[in-house]
Image (cartoon, rainbow, N blue to C red):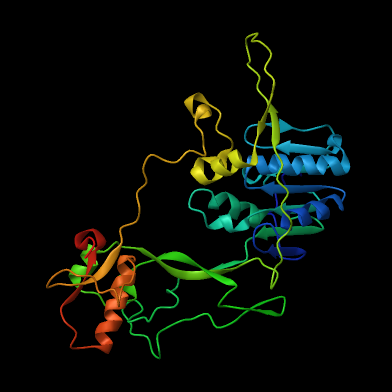
Length: 349
């Protein structure tokens, strides 16, 4: 696996020869990493999913031969003698390597609460001798303050100036991006009471943290980053029963629809195909029996609990309704008794 022996001296790393390749899904980042890796004499690539590692392993084997490629995941290990290239899940990547090339895919998962520490460790401690690629989404996040909202305060201090932060312009490789049509905002958790004036009752009745705009991602389209082509392909597999002599079992196929259903159904799909116990027989494309939606709020007249559709045409989160009511009261000091109430309390009124 190209693991170098441990040395008594501390490992010294730098940003030299490290390239970040960022872009939307299906724009060829992994393909670029494969091409760059096989151009070097040795290499290691880390992927976020076992199934993706399997796919990349097959593609590298087609290019250089299976005898030169190792596959190491949490569930299987294929390590030919003298393997030059290693395809791993990020968790299975070595802490140290003397490989000429290193790539880590989906580096934005460094911010994940469960797996982020693994990605962060590999990003900080793994370098290729000649080249290192960090692949990820073209997403910018910050948790200093909410975007596109007028701030009443910043902690205990009142902001000087307009107190609002908006996205004005974005450039990719020197090319301007249309911030109206080609940008999608991403949300981060913020504590509303640290940014907006709220009464004690509002603070007590509201969640401590609520999601507000805290960043953006660049969409993939022909105007900025053109996505690659999509070619559906079924996965063929065989079922084997260990420790017994069952009747022959034929080949089976994982269709693209079934895999897509597994991806959408549950976060458990991130850890591989479910195949143990009763879960192996659950149709992942079936609809769930029930779901729990986020609680939604509207602005209503306290006299008769009728919804003010001019202020909240559709139900929104509590903090969004609170901010709409704040702005309305600032512009209309003599407005009637209005309040933010849960949607279920007003019903169809």
